[in-house]
Amino acid sequence: MCGVLAIFKNQPVGTELFDGLTSLQHRGQDAAGISTLETTGRINTVKGAGLVRDVIRTRHMHRLKGHMGIGHVRYPTAGTDSKESAQPFYVNSPFGITLAHNGNLVNVDELITDLSDKDFRHLNTGSDSEVLLNILAHELQKESIDSKPTVKEIFKAVEKVHERCEGAYAVTALISGLGVLAFRDPQGIRPLVYGTQKSQLKDNLSDHLNNDSADQKFKKDHIIASETVALDQLNYTFEKNISPGGMIFIDLEGQVHEPNKSSELKTPNPCLFEFVYMARPDSIIDEISVHKTRLRLGDKLGHQIKKEWADKDIDVVMPIPDTSRTAASVVANILDVKFREGFIKNRYIGRTFIMPGQETRKKSVRQKLNTIDLEFDGKNVLLVDDSIVRGTTSKEIISMAREAGAKKVFFASASPMVAYPNVYGIDMPAADELIAHNRTVDEINTLIGSDSLIFQKLEKLYEACSEGNPKITNFEDSVFTGNYICGDIGKSYLEKLYSSRSKR
Image (cartoon, rainbow, N blue to C red):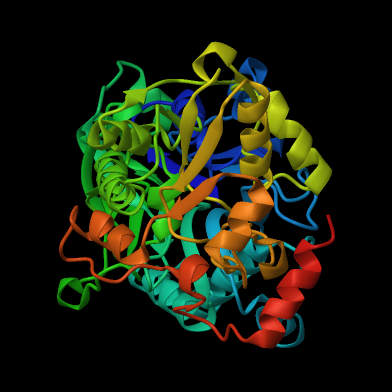
């Protein structure tokens, strides 16, 4: 999972890109980067391994000139180097393009062969994002031939990208001498939103943009981001979600262009795990509030517990910070028991299920959380987590609860059993590393050491999400069902995925 951002405004965008990426930091803590485009056509890039605040420093703002730019935050994936895979990626042919990508291409091997043997393009990394960039560059070159492409030709090139690339992708890009481009995969798996604000014009704007009539041309600033939280924190007004297969282009004059295909807009198939875990609760994805979805998940889980665990003497409900807090509070209310914070989180430790190495993940759980012993002592505790992936965190947390004096430890997952790997942009483990793969609830309960274990039902997760937007009835649910909605995801693909992800 990554976060992408693009901004076009009437002032230098470096600082605002930094702030916007910081609001998307939860989508990736491994690497960060910013590229800006000057009116001269020069593209400036600063990127590297680490958090946004560690990679982009005050001194870099002098280099990040221009009134349009893109940004990226990345989380770690198997077999890749943080520094090498930091985005945005850049290619100088045909026009100079820099690109940031959230998602994963599932036909990347085929594309790499085609790029080498047919398109005669060289790749510097093993990243599918660089593959996607070169596909876009090649198609742009074919469409424009000997001149700069028109907006129509840019959109034709993106349509060719859609034809060639399979998987999930939300993309922002800068094209030297042309403007800002953004597009979303035809299934609408990964989120991408567009917003505007009234421009705050400066007296020296014309000098900055090298355009004497700039103050007459740029009436609005524009933003494109993975989540609406970036719009909120930068004071932009949400305009719309970019539709599945949709694209948007903002030229050097600040004019917004979109293909005239409104009648063909498709309903997205957003990833369910965005609502369960990845997205910030203050975001809205495809018109579905993440916060309200998690409230509904708590409501449905609470009633399920009340029905199935009527014999359990639960004294207190505790969330596993932070993403389960919303659901846990509702569960406590429905069960009419106390809600207490029993774990204190160290916010400087990253998300554990995406950390490379089992020992690293196990150690980080205790670095990340500490117990308030008096909340556990002599009590029957119900712990609520957003999900159970490997089970590493759950097992350690249950052990910590017992060490803190809990008499009994019950465990509830606000999501269904995660039993299959994700292939669309979340570096979730290979199937054999998932604790729910080919196991029953009782078997998982024994492995993690809880007294009783309960999972949210998949149909209830569907209900919780679609209640926020009744137009969406289908979601990308492969981690729960093993049903992959795009690409040839068969046994051979998953075996190769296992091989690459197990090298940690």
